[in-house]
Length: 130
Image (cartoon, rainbow, N blue to C red; front, side, top):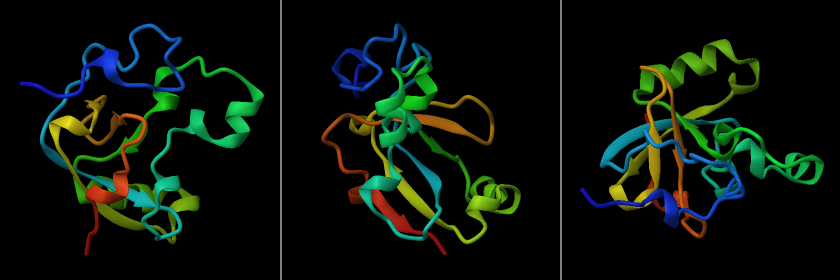
């Protein structure tokens, strides 16, 4: 299977070894994400290490902070809306991820980390989910 190799991902966390994780893969699969403000926009697809407050305050020390959190099922995303107060007014979107859209590490049955390449616009694969 082809896909995006770790060495081709240009990330703010490039200084970290094993980022994205060696166990991450490129694959064709739909995932889901909660949009806190209900709007599909590029700013909603960055890891916490990319947030202005994080970038100016310190160098990321954790590979996961460079990733976008995604869920394998709509039910998993719905659970976030129910348990995280900041997401209570959020909406669920579907991401039609293909092998060239980055690397994914399914770290639990209900959550995954997604590292997409710099310059890739995730809004092009994001769809509203009923």
